[in-house]
Length: 237
Image (cartoon, rainbow, N blue to C red; front, side, top):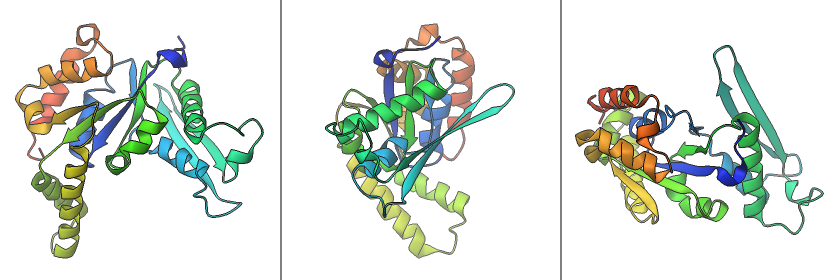
């Protein structure tokens, strides 16, 4: 059944990359049948920047690619926006934020018309959360905090940074800067990984309630909580 755009809650998961943010995105949100978080696409900001004239010339464009999986196939949606999109018929006189929001809603209604909660998860939003709020003033943000030292260990392990102290130091400075910035985000649900580890069921309920969903009506709740518990028991947290 299609969900009207006025009934859709836009949600953005903000935090440092890799496992911690993915936990909230994939295991605590996307296992709910009414939710889809695209993950690592930055599609609202890609469109927003283009509308702001950040293209490199008349031929520049941005292609937003979102994927939908089902039991039998993969459906890929691609929408291209030319650099002069703000000059196309019907767009004059409308704000950059309104145009971006309409484009995002068109993508949602095309690929995921049945979901009530839709959005994205990205580290880009850590430093550009104000732009995201301008596009979606009523969106729900979930800010995931983790220990910068744990983040550095994961980066070293997954990206082979052993023996590269300059890059490790650069990543540490980035992590410290992001941590300070995201603590300033207001009107958001702030999730500390150490708290989530101590009581995953409580925090699962809190996260779902934040996006307007009832944990008691979640058809796969025990499986989802089991997956979350298994994941956060790993040493990457």
